[in-house]
Image 1 (cartoon, one colour):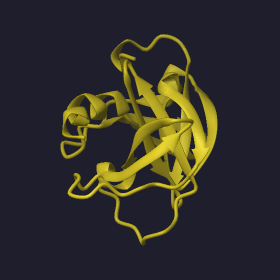
Image 2 (tube, rainbow, N blue to C red):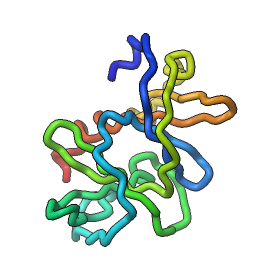
Image 3 (cartoon, rainbow, N blue to C red):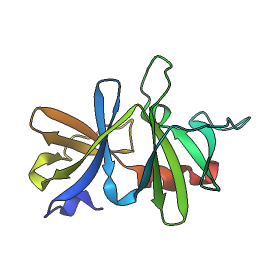
Length: 147
């Protein structure tokens, strides 16, 4: 999705880390599962939590907090968002999936740039709520060869 040419509403999947809200485009979401057995992979990159068996497929699982450089106390996450971009399927651990939101282009602010986070698309404003919009396809494009 090219955010610079937004002219119609689109859907995002909202999720949380602690009290902070984030969003990704719904079109890449394949499924949401409760965190299952994740097997650590020795000597893997810092952001790789491990792999899981998803209906007979081995899916790498990424620690979203590492991608976003979010400080946190260690806790058991409740959901894994499984995304598919082209032929790549990856799970992302989050604290809690909240909801699917319909976003009007007027609710999307892409003017704020954060140099340190090239995976940041903008902010979705829903009433008093602010959801940081994460560019998962960009992350996969950059990192898929490292997994």
